[in-house]
Length: 375
Image (cartoon, one colour):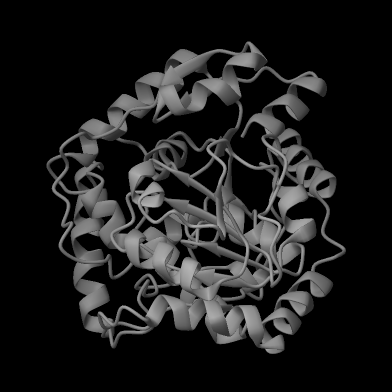
């Protein structure tokens, strides 16, 4: 959001932020010197951590979109909007703010990846295309959300949206991704503007001085199979540059590996991707998007739904490989070896890069700013 805010300020607009996590946002937003508010949220909403969400309706339900909570959450957003008095909202995954905009008939722009700007449908499409999720099951989840929307109606001049899809249609939507990285698959009506929140700072990319394909591993130390991934990287024998937040350094030190160089600081992405032959990561959109824009294939080890969905899309296109089920300790090594040594992965990644070479960050920023100022 920071680049969009700065571009709007440069055009004479007044900008204020409402953010969910102030601590995480502060390093990016504080230097702008703009007003920052705590975004309303429903702490302790009844989620279900035992399974993946079937659709966006489940994500909404688990975020407080149920009849007992949503009306109060909506009023909190309306109070904030009455205080700020905006002419337009620019939203990154803020569905309740969008609902407040609906009732206020306030223009809105939604930006984000395919996951946070979901494809529309009635019922909303599945987030688990690898499973046989019936239309009836999707509709049942959405019924609860629609009931919550109806619970917001009393005392209002405007009727609530009849469905999630209709609410989403209230916003002008921009997808900060490429069609190949859309979690729902390419959309004929999608406005794809590529990644715009790019911050490329950090340590230089330096690999061990060893022969073989260079692997850039960007991982989370608390991944449930981190030990197996590290073992696979070591067994492959190729030089590895590893940045892993929250990694127990003892886990790596006990191995005494000569093929893995741990860089505790974030690595300059452009520097790394200019040299890497493959990227090993969990499937976070930012890293995956940067890698494929540079034509570098991916070995993906997802840990949550958003990552698993992106892995599903990219493996089907041949630009990535990812383990398939089971507990075999060799599955991580098989994935890394395939991407490192089979040219088809590099060719598929290069094809993605070629198809999106025309998309530039400045053009995406201009499109969003123009839309915001025109509403």
